[in-house]
Image (cartoon, rainbow, N blue to C red; front, top):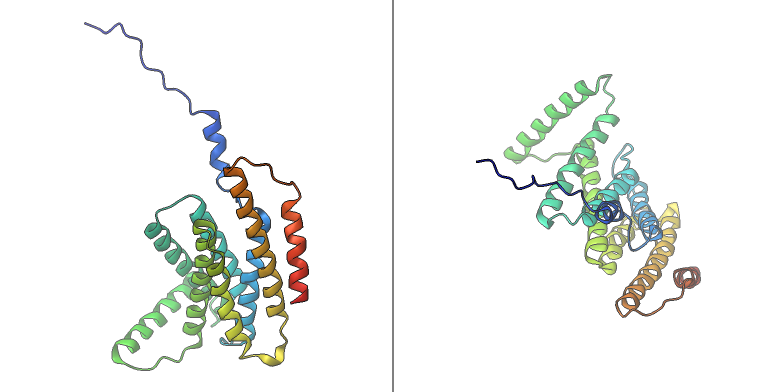
Length: 241
């Protein structure tokens, strides 16, 4: 006997839930925080490039910004930690390989030919490692340098936008900046100045954000000009330092 009960109707997804999806990608910390963070990582990448560890361009600034973007994205979608870290590592590896293929000349016009040549070189590096021979290949060093910069940028973004750890997010690229400036003291210290100014502004902006969170949890009113006032104070402190 056929059932006389009405067929179930698939209820549409609530509009507020659909609106919440794009809002997840809007940083609660503010886009100013992301911009300042990008300046910090760019300054770090510039100090590494000026130290001339690799003979050719390594596109470290672009790699650092991409690492920041991926770290921000994975932090905001609340991906599981292990899955996010594995995804970030393999994405970074692909980015570094793509940049290495783009830089290869060797008379090869086709990217496929360049990738095949890079694969042959990778097999040679692997055999040298197994045989205990020293590897002194600038291309391999440049790739390792790019992957290191990617991991630093990703980790800095992850701990800031997922954990809220400001100190780790600044100290990690800061150590690399200071160390590499020691290898190129005659080129000027403007990347360090940029790093310090951006770090001071980021710290003040993050402090204002944490205060806003405390006030919102306590349902207390907050001044609308609070972030701007904190940024102004941070600018003064950075210039004085």
